[in-house]
Image (spheres, rainbow, N blue to C red):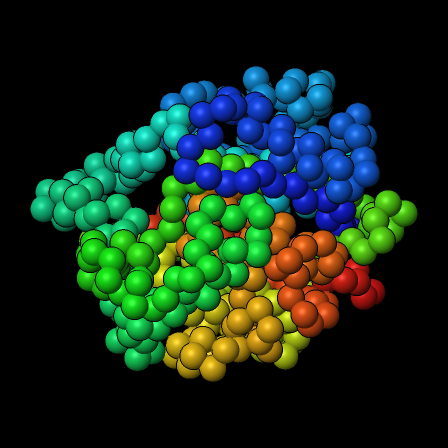
Length: 405
C-alpha cells in the first residue's frame, strides 16, 4: 500500500436553500476551491469518487451529468451512497484508489442539495425496505419502527441511554450546542452562526421527543465538499504541508432499535464505532489516542453525540464526555479541540457531511483552517462519521507526517 496525502480541500458556503444554482453548479464551487487550494488542474485527475444521499434530490445518477461541469471527462467515476457516512466512505474510496496504485491523483466529491427534494421522503424511501422486513417478524414492531420519528426519534432513545450511563443532562447538551455554534462563527462555510447564543436560549426551544429539543438538532443544508488525494511523493512536491492518511476503517452492525428479535442493541453502546476506531488506530500506529490525537472532527447532528462518540473513539474514558466539555477540554483552545469547524450541529449537507469532517481535520494539519485554526500544533487528528440508524461508522486518522516504515 502506498502512502497517500490530501493536498486540497474545497467547500462552499452552506445555507438552507441555494436556489441560485443547480446541482452541477453547486458542486463546481467546492471543486474549484479545491483545485485553487492545491494548485492543480482538472486534467491532472485520474479518477473521481462521487457521493451523495440517493433519493434525496429526486434525481438519478448525478455523478454522470455533473462530470462535464467539473471540467473532468473520460475519467473513471465511482458512486458512493452509505447514508450519513457517505462523505467519509467517499473519502476512503478515494484514498484506496491511490493507496492501491489504481490511480495517482483522485478527486473526491460529495454534496447535498436538499432544497431540491424532500429529506424526510428520501429517508422513508431508504427505510421502507427495512420496515417491511420487520413486518415479517411482527406487524406491531414493523409499524412501530416505521413510525418511530426518523432520525430524531432514534436519537431520543440514544440520548436517554447516554444520559443514564454518563450522567449527562440537558444543560450539557445545550453547552455543546453553544460551543459549536460559536465555533461556526469563525468558519466562513458553516451554516448556523450564532455568536451570542446562550445555554438558556437553547433550553427554551421546543421539545421534539425527550430529551431532543429543536435547539439540539442540526440544520438541513445545501452544500458540497471536494478533496484531492495523491501519492505522498507528489504531495511533498505540490503542497507545503500535506495531510497524510495514516489509517481509515469502517464497521457496521445491526440497526440499533431494530425490534425484530435478537438484533436489538443499545443505541448508545456503539460497538461498531469502537471497532472502527480500534482498526483505524492500529493501521495508523496509534497506541494511546488520549495522548496522541490532537484534534477531532466528530459527526454530531444531535447535541448529545459529540460527548458520546468521543468516548466511543477512546478519546475519553466512558462517561467522561460531559466532564471534559464542562472543563473546556474540547474548546478550540482546549487540550483536545473537537469540532472547531462548528460540527454537524451547525452544518449538515448530509451527503457531504462526513467528508467535511475529514476535510476540516486535514485543514487543521495543513494550517489552512483560517479563523477557526486551533492555536495548538496539530500533528494527528481523528474524524468520524455515522449513518443509518447508528449502525454505520467510518473513522479516519490523519497526520503531518506519513506512516513510519
